Image (cartoon, rainbow, N blue to C red):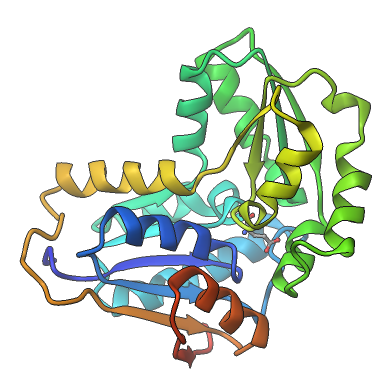
Length: 268
Ligand code: DGL
């Protein structure tokens, strides 16, 4: 493994681009290979075993592509597959998107934490357990918001459709008097401005993108894998299991340039 090798990043679709773009801003010398499993999105309504199967197959592809680290840029996959991927790929450092947010929210001394996430993430209880592990007094309320990822994946952020869905989910008395709200799906930062304007300034909204980029930097430094070479330009490759217009548009939005998509079926 070489420190100039690429970082592998994957999600069910466009959500992980929020993480990839934060990684690219913080670590511009790092090349990355992104995999968006658009053929199987959304992941959030699938069983643990199905999400685990897809995650294993994508990780096999990233390993075969010589990635020096893998970022599971998807909460549903982090919740369903992290431990298993660590066992399956012991020689590649793997990062999930849950732990950096849990550490942050605990360090903020949050009183009442809300979590909005997919059904798979809520069902796993991963946030609840890890936050309570660090602070047994923390109050945590979890709400599954299954319509949000598909509507973001289809390019409906910032429209009446997203506004209606957000009002439907957020106008829930269980979310009253929150101090912090975790966006427990990497798709949701695309709705962050709308969510913040719904709650106003009393609620601090947290997303994982920058926190994961920082955690990745620490991990690469610790493993001696950070790219210190002077490079003209890091390479970015974008693979999808099915090309979609919305993926192309969202990737362009994040990286400010036309993105060349490469189609790749999940390995068997
Ligand atoms: N972006 C993913 C997550 O963080 C998956 C959303 C989905 O495909 O349902 O959970």
